Amino acid sequence: MKLSTKGRYGLRAMLELAVRSNGDHVSLNVIAESQDISENYLEQVVSLLRKAGLVKSVKGAQGGYVLAGKPSEITVGDVLRALEGRLCLIDTDEGPEENIIKRCIRENVWDKMNSKINEIVDSMTLEDLVNEYMKLSAQEPMMYYI
Image 1 (cartoon, helix red, strand yellow):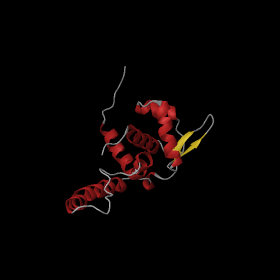
Image 2 (image 1 turned 90 degrees about the horizontal axis):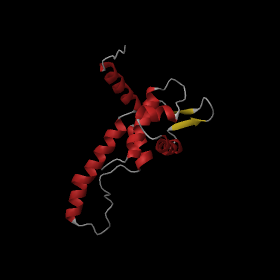
Image 3 (image 1 turned 30 degrees about the vertical axis):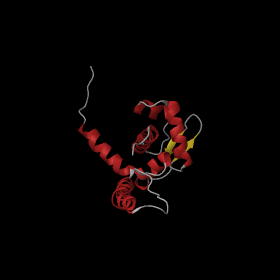
Image 4 (image 1 turned 30 degrees about the horizontal axis):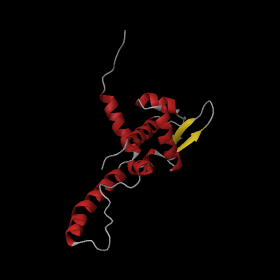
């Protein structure tokens, strides 16, 4: 399974919103600049996230985007499924004429791999990622400019 730029950029945008979640709306321009993503492309991605109910938008001078729920309630799986659809390595829906070898491989390889992928992304929340982000940013050395 390979995630598209939609999924990767969308998760980055959601983490950016979660990191900045102090109640203020964040403009697409700020996210695009911070994450080095085309604002036009980001607009399409965030539109899908809005339709999925993961972000809210506010128009106007003080407008922008904010998470639709608490970071602890939004999983990585929620974000990726909103942008990518089903998360699976291979479509395992075989027909009624599935032979024993196909069934054996499906049940013992594909189904188990698909299950683990979903288990992992559903066990991680945006809050978990924010916490990891904070740990990593605390390790960054301070830069002083003269």
